[in-house]
Amino acid sequence: NHITAGSKLEFTASGTKENALVFDGKGATLNGSIVILGDFIALRNLNVAGDVYVSSSQTSVAFDTVNIAGAFNVTQDPATVASLTAVDMKLEEANYQFLNSTVAVMNIVRDFATIAVDEKSVISKVTIASNVTEVTLNGAFKELVVGANELKLNGQAVIQNLIINSSTAKLVLGTLVKVAQLVLPTGAKVADIISNYNEIKQNITGASNSTTSSTGGSSGSSSSNSNKDDVDSDDSSTD
Image (cartoon, rainbow, N blue to C red; front, side):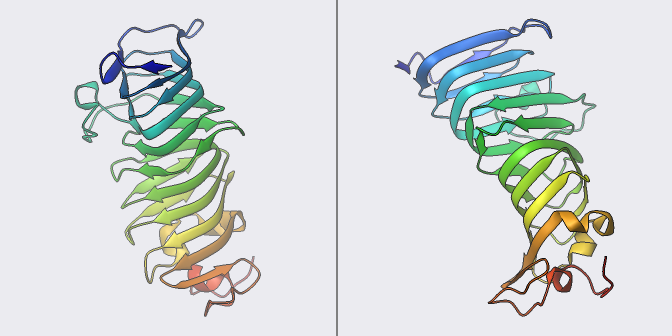
């Protein structure tokens, strides 16, 4: 089944905390995009060929067996929901839950977003805009890309690849955030990027920058570094 009436499906009505407004696509494919302006929305059994946009007005949006081939965009202002324009505004926490769902790319352009995914969901890539200062991730994520942020990353997350694109980025990682591979800009050191590195260094398995890479406790075969701390810090002290 395909939903072909128009190229965009827009939700402006809202449910409640106790009774979400449910849209069941019954396995259909939407050949377009979705814009969600209402609150307490639950989408189920739907394939989206385009993008999904959610604005700052939400408190809770849930996805159950929803496959998004395009980008899932967590924006700030309903008036600019389709443009991903960053604006300064006071925001409350917003929760986005994914059950048995897939997302190709997730773009976070607002503060205080909480992204929760279950073990059956696959989020291939998450990018966090440079204006964002705090995000919570719960679940497993293949790739997280951070620019020139002063960012606090909360939650209980397992991140396969955390890619830092700017040497001016400053991150505080929650104690329950685990990173398999941290990729730094050329010449950068983890201790300069991760503000609380000494407190959470055991949660970072490997680190690399430029063409060098290593894993904690063992040297990489193609790396000039003997261990992770050679990438991380000039300090040779151990835990």
